[in-house]
Image 1: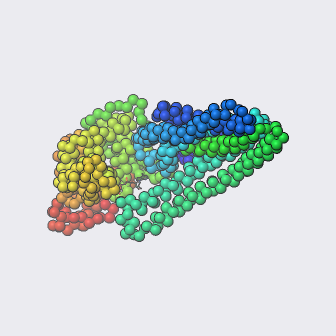
Image 2: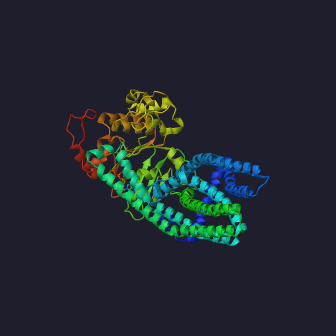
Image 3: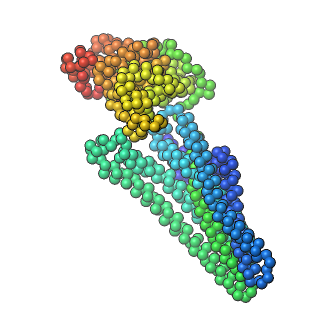
Length: 632
Ligand SMILES: Nc1ncnc2c1ncn2[C@@H]1O[C@H](COP(=O)(O)OP(=O)(O)OP(=O)(O)O)[C@@H](O)[C@H]1O
């Protein structure tokens, strides 16, 4: 999908140069906007330091000639100027470093903001499940952290080298115009060689991005607290470190290949440069012997030809870095151009309270045009203020349907109406504000217990009363208040608590406790019109599950509820139970009606009931602890 936009190799040289120039201009503009003062000072100091070597060489020449001429009066001034030039050279280096650091620090803050803005403006999930977009994003992240600094640094360094080069070239021209022209001409292929080297590096980086991401992924498995347990149980350490090694080897091999090609292409340039320097030196020595050049002329000539070689090297090298950085920076620059994955209305309607119903009309959905249909014409009405339960065997598309209701994706065909208005007419954020949901794969944040709940209504994150109320409704308040630092305890073993000195260390919750925290997070939105609970109780014991259902009944205050669960016994109170099968609504009715129909629901019910042994379940005496029933 993104392959055409992002991944494909661009083989058109002029287009690539144009792209690099646009990115370089964007990076410089960004640096300028971030800290105009530091950038101006940095450029000024760098240009001054580019002029100093030529000035020093001319002063040395003047000094040497003065020494060979008895009675030269100005020698003291020349010596003092030479000392001043040396002092200037010494001072400009750390000053330029400091100013570059200042520009970079301001730039980093700005770039991070822009990067997150670029990502956050994408309302749906589609891009985040697209590998080529993820490659691009990773490249943009990498470029965002290093490219602007490299670009600004190398562009300034190029200007500095160009100033130095110009100074020395003028000096050589004055002494021997032919040699000046030859030296200048030789600089051009060296520059081109270095630009090609920069492009190769940028392309190699892009082509191996997928390998780099995999290497990081395998590496993180070996260190992530969530995975180390299974890795040890199954003895997978070597397996994953080998895989990480293989990916890294691919990257390293590509890098080596690129550098070998670059070196091969650069060697003739270097040899040619030395040959010109040697020829010039022979000529200068001969000319001095014949009295055509003074000793001072020879010294300035040697300094200038060496300086030109150095300047060309610096110019080409920095141009190469700038070119490479500008190509990778393209990934960052164009992040803002990625089309949003959900069409947004030009003038979104305000989302009204859900007074009537939420209706799915002939909803078809597949994740990509190539993948199979998940939903095949779902017609479903969720009447406002009622509780609907959704059941179905694994993989029938229940969670997918939830994602459509939250507008993480749009239906491929058909529509979803909120009080009769297509939800595509609303801004996704505004719609989501009216929805509270606990996803099956809810998130566990390495934050404090209070924050983990308060995130459900981030504008009320600090309202301890509301957080405690939500935790109580989810039946997790007693546990959280017993934590070392209560709701301020970090729910993490990865990060220690920040802030107050001597704050308690992080603590961990059990799976079921985490699930209650996720439910509490949804309960922070007790004023939501729509409450969706996708498997809210899979990790809970029967009593806890009953508690949550009781709270839900109490808290929902007229909200429309959609509950997905494989534990059919918990769904008996629902106003309607809908069975999803083959991507459509297969059955629908109350618990009793569905049992009477003796269809799929009745079959699953009997299957599950057979797994119970009367009297074992404290929370539901009629149906004790269930054993897993196939498919449900
Ligand atoms: N992001 C995705 N990209 C591609 N396919 C997906 C994606 N998410 C889910 N699927 C596929 O969609 C199908 C339905 O998945 P979904 O999670 O909606 O099922 P479910 O009914 O909720 O299952 P379960 O009862 O196991 O939770 C599955 O076959 C799954 O492979």
